[in-house]
Image (cartoon, rainbow, N blue to C red; front, side, top):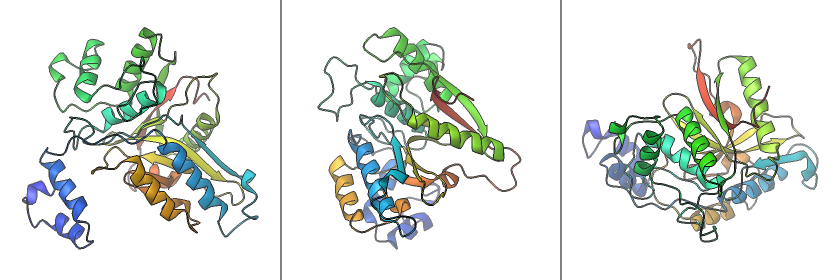
Length: 310
C-alpha cells in the first residue's frame, strides 16, 4: 500500500511517523523496495525467555490465589532451540511472500538443524537452508515446479510437511518424526474447541525424547508459528498462545528481546503485554479470529503425527 501511493509522504508512513517510530518506517520502506536483508534470526533462548516472563506476569495477576500458587499457571512451549526467523533474515529479500519459508526454517531449527546464530549447536548438524535452497529441495520432491526456484512463490503447511518428512527420513542425524496437516474451520465452535484442545495436548506432550517443534498455521494468506500455550487455571480464562510472526520487519538480536522483557517483567501483570518485535503472547481468539459474514474460515495447521489425534 505504501509503495502504490508513492515512496514519500504516504498516509501509511505518515501515521507511523506520528508515532515517532522512524526506525519502523525506514525498515518498512527498505522491505517494500527489496533492500532489507542480512537480518540475523533470533535465538536460541527466545522461547525460554518468553515462557519465563509469561509465568512471572501471570503470577502477579490481580485475580485468583496468591502469586505463590504457580502450580495453577501452566506454560508449555516448544523446544528451547527454536529460533525466530522473519522477513529479511539472511540474504533473502522475501517481504510480502516468504512467511511460509520462514515458518519452515523455525520448525527446522527446533528439530536439530543448525542456525547461524546458534553457537552451541552440534557442528555436524545440517544448517538451516535459505529460501532459495528450500525451493530447490521442494522442487526435487515435486512440491513446487523446477521453474519456481528463485521465485516469489508462496508455500503452505502441506509443502512444509512433505519437505520435513522427506528430510527427516533421509538423514539419520535428524529426529525421525513425521508430519501431517489438518484443516480447521474457525467459524465452527466445534472446530475451535478441537483446535484449542489439540494445541494444549501438543505442547503438554512428551515425544519419546524427540524435540517438540512449534506448530505452523496458515489461513490461506498468512503463515505463523505457535511456539507455546499458557493457561491460568485460577481464572479459567481462555488460553494464550505464543505466536512467532515471520512478517516482522527490522533487525533485533536476542539481547534486544532480553532488554525489552526485563523492563516489562518489573511489575507487569498482563500476559498480553508480553510482546516484542514479532513475538507475542496472544489470546486464542485473537490468533484464530473468525471473520464476520464468512460461513467458513479454514486454517491449515501442521502437526507432528503424534499430535492432534482425535
